[in-house]
Image (cartoon, rainbow, N blue to C red; front, side, top):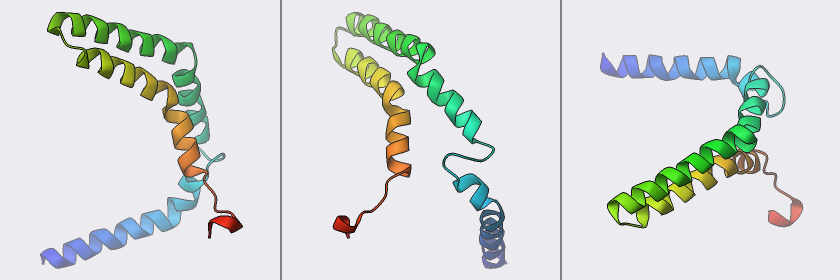
Length: 102
């Protein structure tokens, strides 16, 4: 019985991916392109800079309170990660193979 449920779930997931996959897979078009571009603009615009600065300041305060540089490093890492995440995501998902790479 359990094996049949697992197989039915796998088949249902494959059917959903077959129908909706081309819509979701489109990198620069589709229904989620506007949401992705808005979030990218927020992360790399003024909103993202304010949030990153807040992370760094909280890291500095936590580092002073705990007498440890690790909290400051986590604040810096979080701020840098927030700002650079859209670029990394674009690079990973838009990667192409050239003839020299094969």
